[in-house]
Image 1 (cartoon, each protein chain N blue to C red):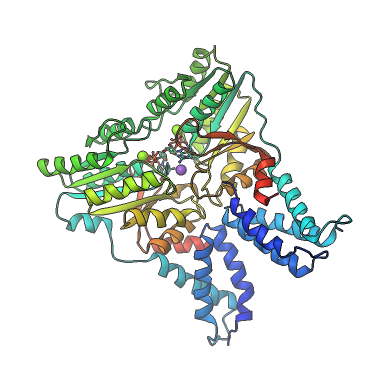
Image 2: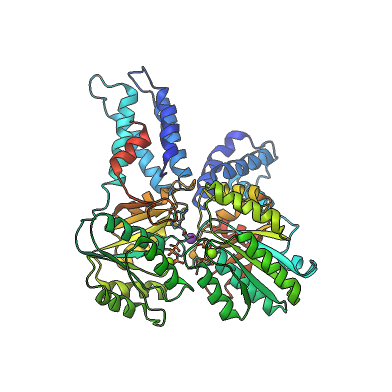
Length: 279
Length: 291
Ligand SMILES: Nc1nc2c(ncn2[C@@H]2O[C@H](COP(=O)(O)OP(=O)(O)OP(=O)(O)O)[C@@H](O)[C@H]2O)c(=O)[nH]1
Ligand SMILES: Nc1nc2c(ncn2[C@@H]2O[C@H](COP(=O)(O)OP(=O)(O)OP(=O)(O)O)[C@@H](O)[C@H]2O)c(=O)[nH]1
Ligand SMILES: [K+]
Ligand SMILES: [Mg+2]
Ligand SMILES: [Mg+2]
Protein backbone atom coordinates (compact mmCIF):
# COMPACT_ATOMS: atom_id res chain seq x y z
CA UNK A 1 0.00 0.00 0.00
CA UNK A 2 1.28 3.45 -0.90
CA UNK A 3 1.38 6.04 1.83
CA UNK A 4 1.92 9.77 1.61
CA UNK A 5 5.57 9.58 2.56
CA UNK A 6 6.42 7.30 -0.36
CA UNK A 7 5.09 10.00 -2.63
CA UNK A 8 6.87 13.01 -1.15
CA UNK A 9 10.12 12.56 -3.08
CA UNK A 10 8.62 11.68 -6.48
CA UNK A 11 6.00 14.42 -6.20
CA UNK A 12 8.55 17.07 -5.32
CA UNK A 13 10.58 16.08 -8.36
CA UNK A 14 7.44 16.14 -10.41
CA UNK A 15 6.58 19.63 -9.26
CA UNK A 16 9.94 20.93 -10.43
CA UNK A 17 9.55 19.09 -13.72
CA UNK A 18 6.16 20.71 -14.26
CA UNK A 19 7.57 24.13 -13.42
CA UNK A 20 10.44 23.50 -15.81
CA UNK A 21 7.81 22.84 -18.45
CA UNK A 22 6.12 26.18 -17.68
CA UNK A 23 3.05 24.76 -15.96
CA UNK A 24 1.86 27.51 -13.64
CA UNK A 25 2.58 26.87 -9.99
CA UNK A 26 -0.96 26.70 -8.58
CA UNK A 27 -2.01 24.53 -11.52
CA UNK A 28 0.96 22.24 -10.90
CA UNK A 29 -0.01 22.02 -7.23
CA UNK A 30 -3.56 21.05 -8.09
CA UNK A 31 -2.32 18.38 -10.44
CA UNK A 32 -0.04 17.02 -7.74
CA UNK A 33 -2.87 17.00 -5.21
CA UNK A 34 -4.96 15.00 -7.63
CA UNK A 35 -2.15 12.49 -8.11
CA UNK A 36 -1.66 12.22 -4.35
CA UNK A 37 -5.36 11.59 -3.85
CA UNK A 38 -5.38 9.02 -6.62
CA UNK A 39 -2.42 7.10 -5.33
CA UNK A 40 -2.49 7.20 -1.53
CA UNK A 41 -3.92 3.95 -0.24
CA UNK A 42 -3.66 2.25 -3.62
CA UNK A 43 -2.47 -1.34 -3.60
CA UNK A 44 0.88 -1.48 -5.24
CA UNK A 45 1.60 -4.40 -7.57
CA UNK A 46 5.06 -5.52 -6.60
CA UNK A 47 6.41 -5.04 -10.09
CA UNK A 48 5.60 -1.34 -10.13
CA UNK A 49 7.90 1.32 -8.74
CA UNK A 50 6.44 4.41 -7.13
CA UNK A 51 8.00 6.43 -9.95
CA UNK A 52 6.17 4.49 -12.66
CA UNK A 53 2.87 4.75 -10.78
CA UNK A 54 3.32 8.48 -10.39
CA UNK A 55 4.08 8.85 -14.08
CA UNK A 56 0.91 7.00 -15.06
CA UNK A 57 -1.12 9.10 -12.69
CA UNK A 58 0.48 12.24 -14.09
CA UNK A 59 -0.40 11.26 -17.64
CA UNK A 60 -4.03 10.81 -16.60
CA UNK A 61 -4.07 14.07 -14.67
CA UNK A 62 -2.56 16.08 -17.53
CA UNK A 63 -4.86 14.56 -20.08
CA UNK A 64 -7.88 15.28 -17.94
CA UNK A 65 -6.86 18.96 -17.95
CA UNK A 66 -6.23 19.42 -21.66
CA UNK A 67 -8.38 16.80 -23.33
CA UNK A 68 -11.58 18.79 -22.97
CA UNK A 69 -14.17 17.98 -25.56
CA UNK A 70 -16.92 20.20 -26.75
CA UNK A 71 -15.59 22.60 -29.32
CA UNK A 72 -13.89 21.67 -32.56
CA UNK A 73 -13.14 24.79 -34.55
CA UNK A 74 -13.66 23.30 -37.99
CA UNK A 75 -16.81 21.43 -37.04
CA UNK A 76 -18.14 24.62 -35.53
CA UNK A 77 -17.47 26.55 -38.73
CA UNK A 78 -19.09 23.81 -40.78
CA UNK A 79 -22.20 23.64 -38.64
CA UNK A 80 -22.84 27.28 -37.83
CA UNK A 81 -25.27 29.41 -39.72
CA UNK A 82 -23.39 31.71 -42.12
CA UNK A 83 -21.87 34.14 -41.84
CA UNK A 84 -20.10 32.89 -38.75
CA UNK A 85 -18.14 35.49 -36.83
CA UNK A 86 -14.99 34.65 -34.89
CA UNK A 87 -13.16 37.24 -32.82
CA UNK A 88 -9.55 36.74 -31.71
CA UNK A 89 -8.29 38.15 -28.42
CA UNK A 90 -5.05 38.13 -26.47
CA UNK A 91 -2.18 40.16 -25.08
CA UNK A 92 0.29 42.12 -27.20
CA UNK A 93 2.44 40.42 -29.76
CA UNK A 94 1.37 36.81 -29.26
CA UNK A 95 0.49 36.22 -32.91
CA UNK A 96 -3.21 37.05 -33.26
CA UNK A 97 -2.93 38.76 -36.63
CA UNK A 98 -0.66 36.11 -38.11
CA UNK A 99 -2.93 33.35 -36.81
CA UNK A 100 -5.93 35.01 -38.45
CA UNK A 101 -4.05 35.07 -41.75
CA UNK A 102 -3.20 31.38 -41.36
CA UNK A 103 -6.80 30.47 -40.58
CA UNK A 104 -8.09 32.57 -43.46
CA UNK A 105 -5.93 30.52 -45.80
CA UNK A 106 -6.92 27.25 -44.16
CA UNK A 107 -10.63 28.04 -44.42
CA UNK A 108 -10.34 29.27 -48.01
CA UNK A 109 -8.48 26.06 -48.85
CA UNK A 110 -11.42 24.17 -47.36
CA UNK A 111 -13.78 26.01 -49.68
CA UNK A 112 -15.16 28.73 -47.41
CA UNK A 113 -15.18 32.39 -48.28
CA UNK A 114 -13.58 34.65 -45.68
CA UNK A 115 -13.55 38.35 -44.84
CA UNK A 116 -11.09 39.86 -42.39
CA UNK A 117 -11.95 42.69 -40.01
CA UNK A 118 -9.18 44.74 -38.48
CA UNK A 119 -10.43 45.53 -35.02
CA UNK A 120 -6.91 46.70 -34.19
CA UNK A 121 -7.45 50.39 -34.73
CA UNK A 122 -4.75 51.14 -32.19
CA UNK A 123 -1.28 49.84 -32.95
CA UNK A 124 1.08 51.51 -35.41
CA UNK A 125 1.19 49.58 -38.67
CA UNK A 126 -1.72 47.31 -37.78
CA UNK A 127 -3.81 48.16 -40.84
CA UNK A 128 -0.83 47.80 -43.18
CA UNK A 129 0.08 44.46 -41.61
CA UNK A 130 -3.34 42.86 -42.04
CA UNK A 131 -3.83 44.49 -45.46
CA UNK A 132 -0.64 42.86 -46.70
CA UNK A 133 -1.82 39.48 -45.43
CA UNK A 134 -5.20 40.00 -47.08
CA UNK A 135 -3.52 40.92 -50.36
CA UNK A 136 -1.21 37.91 -50.22
CA UNK A 137 -4.17 35.62 -49.61
CA UNK A 138 -6.60 37.37 -51.92
CA UNK A 139 -9.21 37.98 -49.25
CA UNK A 140 -11.16 41.11 -48.45
CA UNK A 141 -10.20 43.24 -45.45
CA UNK A 142 -12.53 45.67 -43.75
CA UNK A 143 -10.63 48.32 -41.82
CA UNK A 144 -11.17 51.82 -40.48
CA UNK A 145 -8.82 54.67 -39.73
CA UNK A 146 -6.44 54.37 -36.83
CA UNK A 147 -8.21 55.54 -33.69
CA UNK A 148 -11.59 54.28 -34.91
CA UNK A 149 -14.01 52.12 -32.95
CA UNK A 150 -13.07 48.43 -33.23
CA UNK A 151 -16.66 47.37 -32.63
CA UNK A 152 -17.76 49.33 -35.69
CA UNK A 153 -15.12 47.66 -37.86
CA UNK A 154 -16.18 44.13 -36.97
CA UNK A 155 -19.82 45.16 -37.27
CA UNK A 156 -19.14 46.46 -40.80
CA UNK A 157 -17.42 43.24 -41.74
CA UNK A 158 -20.40 41.20 -40.59
CA UNK A 159 -22.69 43.38 -42.70
CA UNK A 160 -20.33 42.99 -45.63
CA UNK A 161 -20.39 39.21 -45.21
CA UNK A 162 -24.19 39.17 -45.09
CA UNK A 163 -24.47 41.34 -48.19
CA UNK A 164 -21.88 39.36 -50.14
CA UNK A 165 -22.64 35.84 -49.06
CA UNK A 166 -19.33 35.39 -47.25
CA UNK A 167 -19.10 32.40 -44.92
CA UNK A 168 -16.67 33.47 -42.23
CA UNK A 169 -15.72 36.78 -40.58
CA UNK A 170 -12.37 36.69 -38.79
CA UNK A 171 -12.11 39.69 -36.47
CA UNK A 172 -8.72 40.85 -35.21
CA UNK A 173 -8.37 42.94 -32.07
CA UNK A 174 -5.53 45.07 -30.76
CA UNK A 175 -3.20 43.37 -28.34
CA UNK A 176 -3.79 44.55 -24.81
CA UNK A 177 -2.58 43.61 -21.40
CA UNK A 178 -5.27 42.45 -19.03
CA UNK A 179 -4.19 45.13 -16.56
CA UNK A 180 -5.42 47.88 -18.88
CA UNK A 181 -8.96 48.38 -17.69
CA UNK A 182 -9.86 50.79 -20.53
CA UNK A 183 -8.87 48.32 -23.18
CA UNK A 184 -10.49 45.40 -21.40
CA UNK A 185 -13.71 47.41 -21.19
CA UNK A 186 -13.43 48.08 -24.92
CA UNK A 187 -13.13 44.34 -25.48
CA UNK A 188 -16.22 43.68 -23.38
CA UNK A 189 -18.08 46.20 -25.49
CA UNK A 190 -17.00 44.57 -28.70
CA UNK A 191 -18.11 41.20 -27.36
CA UNK A 192 -21.47 42.58 -26.25
CA UNK A 193 -22.29 44.58 -29.36
CA UNK A 194 -20.92 42.28 -32.06
CA UNK A 195 -21.88 39.16 -30.12
CA UNK A 196 -19.52 36.95 -32.15
CA UNK A 197 -20.37 33.28 -32.62
CA UNK A 198 -16.98 32.33 -31.23
CA UNK A 199 -14.17 33.97 -29.33
CA UNK A 200 -10.72 32.48 -29.71
CA UNK A 201 -7.99 33.41 -27.26
CA UNK A 202 -4.47 33.49 -28.64
CA UNK A 203 -1.41 33.08 -26.46
CA UNK A 204 2.10 31.89 -27.06
CA UNK A 205 3.51 28.54 -26.05
CA UNK A 206 6.64 30.22 -24.69
CA UNK A 207 4.65 32.11 -22.04
CA UNK A 208 5.46 31.24 -18.46
CA UNK A 209 3.58 31.61 -15.19
CA UNK A 210 1.57 34.64 -16.32
CA UNK A 211 -0.43 32.54 -18.80
CA UNK A 212 -3.08 31.83 -16.16
CA UNK A 213 -3.60 35.48 -15.25
CA UNK A 214 -4.25 36.62 -18.76
CA UNK A 215 -6.36 33.62 -19.73
CA UNK A 216 -8.58 34.28 -16.72
CA UNK A 217 -8.91 38.01 -17.38
CA UNK A 218 -9.63 37.62 -21.07
CA UNK A 219 -12.15 34.88 -20.37
CA UNK A 220 -13.88 37.24 -17.93
CA UNK A 221 -14.02 40.07 -20.45
CA UNK A 222 -15.16 38.03 -23.46
CA UNK A 223 -15.85 34.35 -22.77
CA UNK A 224 -13.33 32.12 -24.58
CA UNK A 225 -14.49 29.15 -26.66
CA UNK A 226 -11.01 27.86 -27.34
CA UNK A 227 -7.35 28.80 -27.40
CA UNK A 228 -4.64 28.85 -30.04
CA UNK A 229 -1.04 28.67 -28.88
CA UNK A 230 1.56 30.14 -31.21
CA UNK A 231 5.35 29.81 -31.19
CA UNK A 232 5.15 26.07 -30.59
CA UNK A 233 8.11 25.86 -32.99
CA UNK A 234 10.33 27.69 -30.47
CA UNK A 235 10.85 24.46 -28.52
CA UNK A 236 8.61 25.47 -25.71
CA UNK A 237 7.88 22.93 -23.04
CA UNK A 238 4.14 22.99 -23.54
CA UNK A 239 3.16 23.84 -20.00
CA UNK A 240 1.25 26.91 -21.12
CA UNK A 241 -1.27 24.58 -22.77
CA UNK A 242 -1.90 22.97 -19.40
CA UNK A 243 -2.15 26.28 -17.56
CA UNK A 244 -4.53 27.91 -20.05
CA UNK A 245 -6.79 24.86 -20.43
CA UNK A 246 -6.98 24.51 -16.70
CA UNK A 247 -8.11 28.11 -16.25
CA UNK A 248 -10.55 28.29 -19.15
CA UNK A 249 -11.79 24.71 -19.19
CA UNK A 250 -11.82 25.13 -22.96
CA UNK A 251 -9.82 23.20 -25.53
CA UNK A 252 -6.60 24.20 -27.25
CA UNK A 253 -7.66 24.29 -30.90
CA UNK A 254 -4.46 24.76 -32.87
CA UNK A 255 -0.75 25.26 -32.44
CA UNK A 256 1.10 27.89 -34.42
CA UNK A 257 4.34 26.31 -35.62
CA UNK A 258 6.07 29.02 -37.60
CA UNK A 259 5.61 32.26 -39.50
CA UNK A 260 4.36 30.78 -42.78
CA UNK A 261 0.67 30.64 -43.70
CA UNK A 262 0.61 26.86 -43.46
CA UNK A 263 2.35 26.74 -40.10
CA UNK A 264 -0.72 25.83 -38.10
CA UNK A 265 -1.63 22.39 -36.77
CA UNK A 266 -4.58 20.94 -35.02
CA UNK A 267 -3.75 20.45 -31.37
CA UNK A 268 -3.18 16.88 -30.26
CA UNK A 269 -3.51 16.47 -26.48
CA UNK A 270 -1.87 13.03 -26.40
CA UNK A 271 1.16 14.28 -28.32
CA UNK A 272 1.56 17.22 -25.97
CA UNK A 273 1.43 14.99 -22.91
CA UNK A 274 3.98 12.65 -24.52
CA UNK A 275 6.25 15.64 -25.06
CA UNK A 276 5.78 16.80 -21.50
CA UNK A 277 6.55 13.39 -20.09
CA UNK A 278 9.53 12.76 -22.32
CA UNK A 279 12.07 14.54 -20.17
CA UNK B 1 7.22 45.07 -11.97
CA UNK B 2 10.08 42.62 -11.90
CA UNK B 3 9.75 40.18 -9.05
CA UNK B 4 7.73 42.58 -6.96
CA UNK B 5 6.05 39.76 -5.07
CA UNK B 6 9.31 38.52 -3.67
CA UNK B 7 9.39 41.63 -1.54
CA UNK B 8 6.07 41.12 0.17
CA UNK B 9 6.24 37.36 0.61
CA UNK B 10 9.80 37.49 1.78
CA UNK B 11 9.13 40.34 4.17
CA UNK B 12 6.29 38.32 5.64
CA UNK B 13 8.56 35.37 6.25
CA UNK B 14 11.44 37.46 7.49
CA UNK B 15 9.17 39.25 9.89
CA UNK B 16 8.79 35.99 11.77
CA UNK B 17 12.46 36.33 12.59
CA UNK B 18 11.93 39.70 14.22
CA UNK B 19 13.45 39.82 17.68
CA UNK B 20 15.36 36.58 17.20
CA UNK B 21 19.11 36.72 17.47
CA UNK B 22 19.75 33.19 16.28
CA UNK B 23 18.26 31.46 13.28
CA UNK B 24 17.35 27.82 13.36
CA UNK B 25 17.69 25.48 10.43
CA UNK B 26 13.92 25.42 10.30
CA UNK B 27 13.75 29.20 9.94
CA UNK B 28 16.25 29.12 7.10
CA UNK B 29 14.40 26.28 5.45
CA UNK B 30 11.16 28.23 5.51
CA UNK B 31 12.75 31.39 4.16
CA UNK B 32 14.53 29.53 1.41
CA UNK B 33 11.29 27.83 0.37
CA UNK B 34 9.57 31.19 0.22
CA UNK B 35 12.35 32.63 -1.92
CA UNK B 36 12.18 29.64 -4.24
CA UNK B 37 8.44 30.02 -4.61
CA UNK B 38 8.64 33.69 -5.47
CA UNK B 39 11.45 33.24 -7.95
CA UNK B 40 9.75 30.31 -9.65
CA UNK B 41 6.48 32.21 -9.88
CA UNK B 42 8.44 35.03 -11.48
CA UNK B 43 9.68 32.64 -14.23
CA UNK B 44 13.29 32.54 -13.10
CA UNK B 45 14.98 29.43 -14.47
CA UNK B 46 14.45 26.43 -12.17
CA UNK B 47 18.12 25.46 -11.89
CA UNK B 48 19.14 29.06 -11.31
CA UNK B 49 16.58 29.28 -8.50
CA UNK B 50 18.04 26.18 -6.91
CA UNK B 51 21.59 27.55 -7.16
CA UNK B 52 20.56 30.86 -5.65
CA UNK B 53 18.59 29.33 -2.83
CA UNK B 54 21.34 26.81 -2.03
CA UNK B 55 23.84 29.55 -1.65
CA UNK B 56 21.48 31.66 0.46
CA UNK B 57 20.79 28.65 2.66
CA UNK B 58 24.44 27.78 3.05
CA UNK B 59 25.46 31.30 3.91
CA UNK B 60 22.57 31.86 6.30
CA UNK B 61 23.55 28.76 8.25
CA UNK B 62 27.30 29.16 8.14
CA UNK B 63 28.08 32.83 8.30
CA UNK B 64 28.11 34.40 11.74
CA UNK B 65 25.98 37.52 11.84
CA UNK B 66 28.22 40.52 12.57
CA UNK B 67 27.91 41.64 16.21
CA UNK B 68 24.64 43.32 17.03
CA UNK B 69 22.90 42.22 13.81
CA UNK B 70 19.55 40.55 14.24
CA UNK B 71 18.84 37.24 12.56
CA UNK B 72 16.38 38.97 10.27
CA UNK B 73 18.82 41.61 9.10
CA UNK B 74 21.50 38.99 8.64
CA UNK B 75 19.37 36.89 6.29
CA UNK B 76 18.12 39.96 4.50
CA UNK B 77 21.68 41.07 3.86
CA UNK B 78 22.58 37.69 2.40
CA UNK B 79 19.56 37.69 0.09
CA UNK B 80 20.39 41.24 -0.95
CA UNK B 81 24.00 40.37 -1.74
CA UNK B 82 23.07 37.30 -3.72
CA UNK B 83 20.57 39.26 -5.80
CA UNK B 84 23.02 42.11 -6.38
CA UNK B 85 25.51 39.50 -7.51
CA UNK B 86 23.05 38.09 -9.98
CA UNK B 87 21.56 41.32 -11.30
CA UNK B 88 24.79 43.31 -11.38
CA UNK B 89 24.84 46.89 -12.55
CA UNK B 90 22.54 48.40 -15.12
CA UNK B 91 23.96 47.96 -18.64
CA UNK B 92 26.27 50.86 -19.37
CA UNK B 93 24.70 53.11 -21.97
CA UNK B 94 27.06 56.06 -22.45
CA UNK B 95 25.52 59.27 -23.77
CA UNK B 96 27.69 59.40 -26.85
CA UNK B 97 27.76 58.26 -30.48
CA UNK B 98 26.98 54.59 -30.79
CA UNK B 99 25.18 51.85 -32.68
CA UNK B 100 22.79 49.54 -30.86
CA UNK B 101 21.42 46.33 -32.34
CA UNK B 102 18.13 44.93 -31.05
CA UNK B 103 17.40 41.21 -31.22
CA UNK B 104 14.76 38.90 -29.84
CA UNK B 105 11.87 36.52 -30.31
CA UNK B 106 8.91 37.30 -32.52
CA UNK B 107 6.62 39.85 -30.94
CA UNK B 108 8.86 40.49 -27.93
CA UNK B 109 8.66 44.25 -28.46
CA UNK B 110 11.77 45.14 -30.49
CA UNK B 111 10.20 47.66 -32.84
CA UNK B 112 8.37 49.43 -30.02
CA UNK B 113 11.52 49.40 -27.89
CA UNK B 114 13.58 50.82 -30.77
CA UNK B 115 11.27 53.84 -30.93
CA UNK B 116 11.18 54.14 -27.14
CA UNK B 117 14.96 54.05 -26.85
CA UNK B 118 15.26 56.62 -29.62
CA UNK B 119 12.86 58.85 -27.69
CA UNK B 120 14.91 58.29 -24.53
CA UNK B 121 18.18 59.27 -26.26
CA UNK B 122 16.58 62.35 -27.79
CA UNK B 123 15.45 63.45 -24.32
CA UNK B 124 19.09 63.14 -23.27
CA UNK B 125 20.02 65.61 -26.00
CA UNK B 126 21.36 63.15 -28.57
CA UNK B 127 20.14 62.72 -32.13
CA UNK B 128 19.00 59.14 -32.62
CA UNK B 129 17.89 57.30 -35.75
CA UNK B 130 16.04 54.00 -36.02
CA UNK B 131 16.87 51.65 -38.89
CA UNK B 132 14.24 49.02 -39.66
CA UNK B 133 15.80 45.90 -41.18
CA UNK B 134 12.73 43.65 -40.83
CA UNK B 135 11.90 42.65 -44.39
CA UNK B 136 9.72 39.75 -43.36
CA UNK B 137 6.85 40.85 -41.18
CA UNK B 138 3.99 42.49 -43.10
CA UNK B 139 3.67 46.12 -42.06
CA UNK B 140 7.00 46.18 -40.22
CA UNK B 141 8.19 49.19 -42.20
CA UNK B 142 4.99 51.17 -41.56
CA UNK B 143 4.95 50.25 -37.89
CA UNK B 144 8.51 51.45 -37.30
CA UNK B 145 7.94 54.55 -39.40
CA UNK B 146 4.83 55.53 -37.46
CA UNK B 147 6.42 54.78 -34.10
CA UNK B 148 9.46 56.92 -34.92
CA UNK B 149 7.15 59.72 -36.05
CA UNK B 150 5.51 59.55 -32.64
CA UNK B 151 8.96 59.66 -31.04
CA UNK B 152 9.95 62.52 -33.38
CA UNK B 153 13.20 60.86 -34.35
CA UNK B 154 14.91 60.01 -37.63
CA UNK B 155 14.01 56.81 -39.44
CA UNK B 156 15.36 54.71 -42.25
CA UNK B 157 13.73 51.74 -43.91
CA UNK B 158 13.21 50.45 -47.43
CA UNK B 159 9.98 48.56 -48.07
CA UNK B 160 11.14 47.53 -51.53
CA UNK B 161 14.44 45.97 -50.48
CA UNK B 162 14.45 42.41 -49.24
CA UNK B 163 18.02 42.12 -48.02
CA UNK B 164 18.19 43.18 -44.36
CA UNK B 165 21.98 43.45 -44.44
CA UNK B 166 21.82 45.91 -47.30
CA UNK B 167 19.15 47.94 -45.51
CA UNK B 168 21.33 48.02 -42.42
CA UNK B 169 24.33 49.30 -44.40
CA UNK B 170 22.32 51.81 -46.41
CA UNK B 171 20.54 52.92 -43.26
CA UNK B 172 23.74 53.68 -41.39
CA UNK B 173 24.92 55.74 -44.32
CA UNK B 174 21.63 57.54 -44.84
CA UNK B 175 21.43 58.49 -41.16
CA UNK B 176 25.10 59.42 -40.84
CA UNK B 177 24.14 62.67 -39.12
CA UNK B 178 22.58 60.88 -36.20
CA UNK B 179 24.55 60.30 -33.00
CA UNK B 180 22.85 57.08 -31.99
CA UNK B 181 21.84 54.37 -34.46
CA UNK B 182 19.29 51.86 -33.27
CA UNK B 183 18.99 48.89 -35.59
CA UNK B 184 15.71 46.99 -35.35
CA UNK B 185 15.61 43.41 -36.63
CA UNK B 186 12.92 40.90 -37.52
CA UNK B 187 11.77 38.52 -34.79
CA UNK B 188 13.47 35.12 -34.61
CA UNK B 189 14.07 32.31 -32.17
CA UNK B 190 16.91 29.97 -31.32
CA UNK B 191 15.84 27.11 -33.58
CA UNK B 192 15.53 29.16 -36.76
CA UNK B 193 19.02 28.58 -38.14
CA UNK B 194 18.53 30.67 -41.30
CA UNK B 195 17.32 33.61 -39.29
CA UNK B 196 20.10 33.22 -36.75
CA UNK B 197 22.60 33.30 -39.62
CA UNK B 198 20.84 36.36 -40.95
CA UNK B 199 21.22 38.31 -37.72
CA UNK B 200 24.89 37.29 -37.56
CA UNK B 201 25.30 38.90 -40.97
CA UNK B 202 23.47 42.02 -39.85
CA UNK B 203 25.68 42.15 -36.79
CA UNK B 204 28.84 41.88 -38.90
CA UNK B 205 27.66 44.64 -41.20
CA UNK B 206 26.55 46.98 -38.44
CA UNK B 207 29.35 46.34 -35.92
CA UNK B 208 27.19 47.50 -33.05
CA UNK B 209 28.70 48.97 -29.91
CA UNK B 210 26.12 46.98 -27.99
CA UNK B 211 23.52 44.36 -28.77
CA UNK B 212 20.43 44.17 -26.61
CA UNK B 213 18.13 41.21 -26.22
CA UNK B 214 14.51 42.38 -26.07
CA UNK B 215 12.62 40.03 -23.80
CA UNK B 216 8.91 39.82 -23.02
CA UNK B 217 8.37 39.96 -19.25
CA UNK B 218 6.08 36.94 -19.57
CA UNK B 219 8.58 34.56 -21.14
CA UNK B 220 8.83 31.25 -19.34
CA UNK B 221 11.61 28.74 -18.88
CA UNK B 222 12.58 28.99 -22.56
CA UNK B 223 14.39 32.25 -21.74
CA UNK B 224 17.56 30.36 -20.95
CA UNK B 225 18.03 28.57 -24.28
CA UNK B 226 16.89 31.58 -26.25
CA UNK B 227 19.31 33.90 -24.45
CA UNK B 228 22.17 31.46 -24.89
CA UNK B 229 21.58 31.15 -28.63
CA UNK B 230 21.41 34.93 -29.16
CA UNK B 231 24.53 35.36 -27.06
CA UNK B 232 26.39 32.70 -29.04
CA UNK B 233 25.39 34.24 -32.34
CA UNK B 234 25.75 37.98 -31.83
CA UNK B 235 26.88 38.49 -28.23
CA UNK B 236 24.36 40.00 -25.83
CA UNK B 237 25.46 43.05 -23.81
CA UNK B 238 22.17 43.87 -22.17
CA UNK B 239 18.52 42.97 -21.82
CA UNK B 240 15.48 45.19 -22.37
CA UNK B 241 12.42 43.83 -20.60
CA UNK B 242 9.06 44.74 -22.14
CA UNK B 243 5.39 44.60 -21.11
CA UNK B 244 6.07 45.15 -17.44
CA UNK B 245 2.73 46.98 -17.26
CA UNK B 246 1.09 43.56 -17.06
CA UNK B 247 1.27 41.02 -14.25
CA UNK B 248 4.26 39.07 -15.55
CA UNK B 249 7.26 39.32 -13.26
CA UNK B 250 10.07 39.31 -15.80
CA UNK B 251 12.16 36.67 -14.07
CA UNK B 252 13.23 35.48 -17.53
CA UNK B 253 15.42 38.56 -17.61
CA UNK B 254 17.32 37.32 -14.56
CA UNK B 255 17.81 34.00 -16.30
CA UNK B 256 18.98 35.79 -19.42
CA UNK B 257 21.53 38.00 -17.65
CA UNK B 258 22.82 34.97 -15.81
CA UNK B 259 23.08 32.96 -19.01
CA UNK B 260 24.73 35.69 -21.07
CA UNK B 261 26.84 37.33 -18.38
CA UNK B 262 25.13 40.59 -19.26
CA UNK B 263 22.94 43.05 -17.40
CA UNK B 264 19.53 44.70 -17.64
CA UNK B 265 19.44 47.93 -19.63
CA UNK B 266 15.85 49.16 -20.03
CA UNK B 267 12.38 48.46 -18.70
CA UNK B 268 9.34 48.92 -20.94
CA UNK B 269 5.90 49.36 -19.50
CA UNK B 270 3.44 50.46 -22.16
CA UNK B 271 2.80 50.94 -25.86
CA UNK B 272 3.71 54.60 -26.17
CA UNK B 273 7.22 55.84 -26.84
CA UNK B 274 7.51 57.42 -23.40
CA UNK B 275 6.90 54.14 -21.58
CA UNK B 276 10.55 53.37 -20.98
CA UNK B 277 12.98 53.73 -18.13
CA UNK B 278 16.54 52.76 -17.42
CA UNK B 279 16.97 49.79 -15.16
CA UNK B 280 18.22 50.87 -11.72
CA UNK B 281 19.50 47.86 -9.79
CA UNK B 282 19.82 49.55 -6.39
CA UNK B 283 16.36 50.97 -6.23
CA UNK B 284 15.07 47.78 -7.80
CA UNK B 285 16.53 45.44 -5.23
CA UNK B 286 15.90 47.73 -2.30
CA UNK B 287 12.28 48.04 -3.30
CA UNK B 288 12.17 44.33 -3.82
CA UNK B 289 13.35 43.65 -0.32
CA UNK B 290 11.55 46.56 1.27
CA UNK B 291 14.75 48.17 2.49
N1 LIG C 1 8.00 31.46 -34.88
C1 LIG C 1 6.72 31.83 -34.89
N2 LIG C 1 6.41 33.14 -35.02
C2 LIG C 1 5.11 33.49 -35.03
C3 LIG C 1 4.07 32.55 -34.87
N3 LIG C 1 2.89 33.22 -34.90
C4 LIG C 1 3.19 34.52 -35.06
N4 LIG C 1 4.52 34.71 -35.15
C5 LIG C 1 5.26 35.97 -35.30
O1 LIG C 1 5.05 36.72 -34.11
C6 LIG C 1 5.10 38.12 -34.39
C7 LIG C 1 3.87 38.79 -33.82
O2 LIG C 1 2.76 38.32 -34.54
P1 LIG C 1 1.44 39.17 -34.72
O3 LIG C 1 0.49 38.32 -35.50
O4 LIG C 1 1.73 40.53 -35.21
O5 LIG C 1 0.96 39.24 -33.20
P2 LIG C 1 -0.31 40.02 -32.61
O6 LIG C 1 -0.77 39.24 -31.45
O7 LIG C 1 -1.27 40.30 -33.69
O8 LIG C 1 0.41 41.37 -32.13
P3 LIG C 1 -0.31 42.75 -31.69
O9 LIG C 1 -1.38 43.00 -32.68
O10 LIG C 1 0.79 43.75 -31.72
O11 LIG C 1 -0.82 42.50 -30.32
C8 LIG C 1 5.25 38.23 -35.89
O12 LIG C 1 6.62 38.43 -36.18
C9 LIG C 1 4.79 36.88 -36.41
O13 LIG C 1 5.41 36.53 -37.64
C10 LIG C 1 4.44 31.16 -34.71
O14 LIG C 1 3.60 30.25 -34.54
N5 LIG C 1 5.77 30.86 -34.72
N1 LIG D 1 1.57 46.83 -22.97
C1 LIG D 1 2.76 46.85 -23.59
N2 LIG D 1 2.83 46.48 -24.87
C2 LIG D 1 4.04 46.51 -25.47
C3 LIG D 1 5.22 46.89 -24.80
N3 LIG D 1 6.24 46.80 -25.69
C4 LIG D 1 5.69 46.39 -26.86
N4 LIG D 1 4.37 46.22 -26.73
C5 LIG D 1 3.39 45.73 -27.70
O1 LIG D 1 3.74 44.40 -28.03
C6 LIG D 1 3.40 44.12 -29.36
C7 LIG D 1 4.62 43.64 -30.09
O2 LIG D 1 5.56 44.71 -30.14
P1 LIG D 1 6.53 44.92 -31.37
O3 LIG D 1 7.36 46.10 -31.06
O4 LIG D 1 5.79 44.87 -32.63
O5 LIG D 1 7.41 43.58 -31.22
P2 LIG D 1 8.56 43.07 -32.18
O6 LIG D 1 9.52 42.35 -31.31
O7 LIG D 1 9.08 44.18 -33.01
O8 LIG D 1 7.76 42.03 -33.10
P3 LIG D 1 8.31 41.30 -34.42
O9 LIG D 1 8.99 42.35 -35.23
O10 LIG D 1 7.11 40.71 -35.05
O11 LIG D 1 9.25 40.25 -33.92
C8 LIG D 1 2.79 45.39 -29.91
O12 LIG D 1 1.39 45.31 -29.72
C9 LIG D 1 3.36 46.47 -29.02
O13 LIG D 1 2.53 47.61 -28.95
C10 LIG D 1 5.12 47.25 -23.41
O14 LIG D 1 6.09 47.56 -22.73
N5 LIG D 1 3.86 47.20 -22.87
K1 LIG E 1 5.70 37.32 -28.38
MG1 LIG F 1 -2.15 42.09 -34.29
MG1 LIG G 1 9.31 44.29 -35.10
